[in-house]
Amino acid sequence: MLFSELPFEIFGEIISCYEDDELPFQIAADQRLKKTLLLCRITRRFRQAAHAHHSLWTIIYLHWRNDVVQHYLERFQQARRLGLSVFLNTQISRLSERMADQARWAQFLREEMKDIVRLEIIMSGGNNPVAQALNETPAPRLKSWTLILDEKAQDNNKIRTPFQHNAPVLRSARIYACRPFDLSAFTSLSRLTLRIGHHNFKRLLELFRGVSSSLETLDLKGVEEWDLQLLPDNPPVPVVLPKCTSLSIKNIAAHRAWHLLSNIVLPSLSHLHVEEKMVSLQDNSLLLSIFSTLPRLGYPAESHDALLLSFYPHSLIVESDGYCFRTDWKELDDSNRALLLQTIIDGASAAATTIFSHPTRLGVVNYIVESRTPHSHILEVTLEDIAVLLRNVLLAYPSVEILGLTGNTTPLLQSLRDAGPAFVPSLQTLLHLTSPTTYFDITSQLWPA
Image 1 (cartoon, one colour):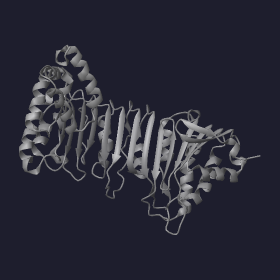
Image 2 (tube, rainbow, N blue to C red):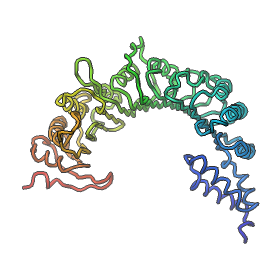
Image 3 (tube, rainbow, N blue to C red):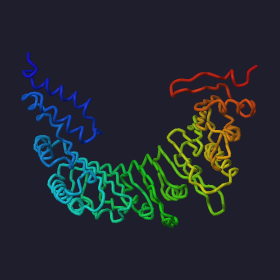
Image 4 (cartoon, rainbow, N blue to C red):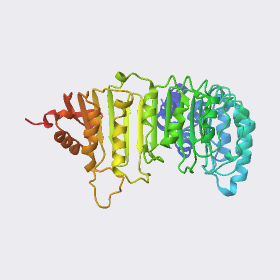
């Protein structure tokens, strides 16, 4: 049988396999277009099968040529039940064509919003027609919405009332905008990702209160350039997020992370990820939020049976079940090395001192490979500091029975030998981990007979 004579069912299976292998959701717009239209050039009957394969035509990039968009839209008419995924990046449009494109994009959004289930928009500069369309057009089927604006777009590019506050099934939103939106009308919203900065920080708690009843996952990412700003006053009553199980805060100063977490009640929290910048306080102490964030999970101490500590020249990572904390001191102005080292020790020991955890398994990752030189930054942790850090941290965890070392392990092993058995009284096994699944027992190398 000739290929062109194969049953349509076989063509459909071929296209489905091709779609899985060659058209993943994350594929670039130009590649999606090229690889989809390629299916229409094989044979006439195969083109008919491709046109009838509805899922091929449910993803549209508005910066494609208008005739291409219309071709996809015509094919989509038979697939409306699947819903439409629409992507728009205004930065791709040529400046000379921008005004005409804006009108075309706005018209598309007004006419097709009723069937859009996923909408991702990246806007640079003002775009009044698109902003008006977003402000005035309800989105009855929208489930996922992404809006990425420039960090300096203080007026949110004139987007003020997205979807007329009418998107009843919206479940996921990623919003990178200066001014906070009122999201209280989106009562189905369960996942929220926000870019936070000096323009919206004061109103964040108010925003969270508006979606408190439905929110399950909250991800916050700080702007790259954050102006100096005093912390806002604490609200009279903290915000309660009863269903929120996962909270992530990244690229934010420690005092701001502390402010947020001290004003949010999270009774269902099971996953907490914090990446912060260490800050120097007026009393010259150094602030880490680990002492207030680690207890937020509400786990009993015995559940933290395994702990992972990772040391870098400018950062420390502490990980346990459901918890990840990273502090970075690269931007500190403070030059007190002794204070910095003690703060690192305190942070690495926090599981023992704040939730009284007694882990039996401890992993130590050492990414410090440089010795101190006259040119080393005053706040850079070097190999000379490893022995001090490791000995003091081990004193906080005398319950450790299995100790795993990875990264630059030679100085770690030497530090253990120099410290002696008193620093690890319960140790039974020492492992050298070369990958997450590969390790060697090096207990015999610790204190050779």
